[in-house]
Image (cartoon, rainbow over all chains, first blue to last red; front, top):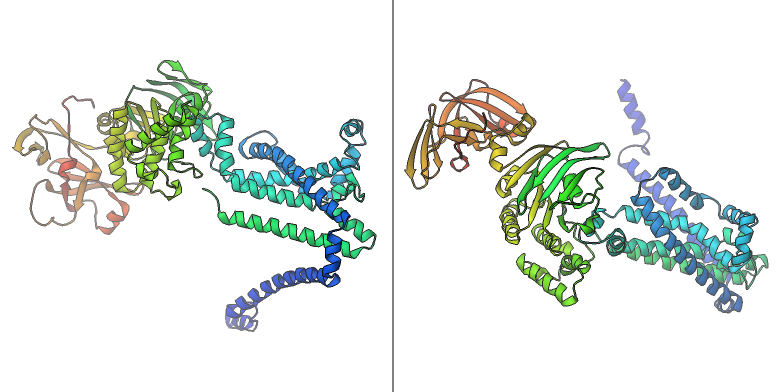
Length: 279
Length: 358
């Protein structure tokens, strides 16, 4: 009797059991996805509705925006190069070596990824006010200058680069290096001739993501290098300055440039990922 | 000659325990043992891929224990071959030659020679990922042989091949390495492979070498229970009479059994039969020939993992036969039951006269 009542109860709630339950679940999850997608599409279209083609082209061709594009490309490229130079050996150590405190190091590397960039920028700024920091700054001139942009970007993206490269290196069978050692290759030669070619796709993908993240970096950059028009004005800082001066047309032009940069980066990564692993 | 002296090594929870082993020049040496015995680890120590802290490894009296792998000139064929996927067949083979200070023409010539030696000249521009198991095996072999090593280490070189290819390559491997005059250390878990290919065999288990000897010594005179359990100790029958039948056949009698075997003219004193080479049937096998078929009764049934071992009393002798668990379950065998046993003629081995078991 009791069982019959329970059955009836369940049958009375078609949303939770049976084929109709499956359908409700599927619709609910797809609806959540649709809300997010529609939200982003509306955001993008609102940009277009606010501007005209003429306003857009004149804004994009203004000397200030061209400066910001050039500065962003140069600083992000240098930041990505420096980050990769440090990240490749660091990720290798994290992936292949055993040392005391490895798990602590591993967690520490997540900090710059999770922490607010402005906090990191502020920490950098405070560091350059210490004795050691100010003597470094007097030689290299980081604070409120272009090298500061690169340093801020590197600080933000290097941990990300290490994370990405570590997962690539983890996926490579260490026996490839072992075999090459028995074929006359030293540890470094084996790394260069075997591990790097095997990691090629991962390296390219990590470089693109690191570069794209550096292009978009704002919080740490603005805190360390400042927001000075035509001096430390990268693309995100240009958006900030344009909005501060209520120049919405210019802000929209820069936003669209950043959207295009991000889309190209993501498409490239998709394409590389589509090639699949070499092994 | 490879000499390993008192080698001990701990890797995680596993350890190699006080290994002492001499491998002669130009010998085909097989390390045989169950999975997880430490066989691969031992050859990786010889290759220099693990740093040995306790013990010594000498090659031709030279201590190589602290030498990095690239300075040892020891060829290594890893399990699954580990070919470089970003290089084609030719470049895989030439990979080690780049470190040999040869000019381009010499590298080309050596690669060509190896390709024709191993019969893979037609594959030379292929992507290694598209090769079959047997082809990969040959390419990996050519790659390992390219820098002309005096010693070749092979980790389960035939275990990922289908039975037919594996069988063919076994003979080829032995011929090729004998022709090149190199010392081979071959790791395997397959007894059949070890028996067919080895000059000498070492049985390894749980990080220790249990026994080293010729295939005959290992298979017919196991020194301890582990070895005899692993290889399945054979039935050894003393023969009272011997009669040549011609055509390479002979008849011997042992107790109440008359056994026909493939043998020449010399007298036979003892024969050996592995339990896996004895068929058991509940019913009289149909048709002629009636040789090597006997009636007996089961005196004992013992389970060894997934194998069932039967003790069958036949004409006053107790023969041990072995069958997989599923075959046993499909039959209706109980202690005391009458059964027929069939001895595989070609699998009956003649032991030489010396009695080493005593």
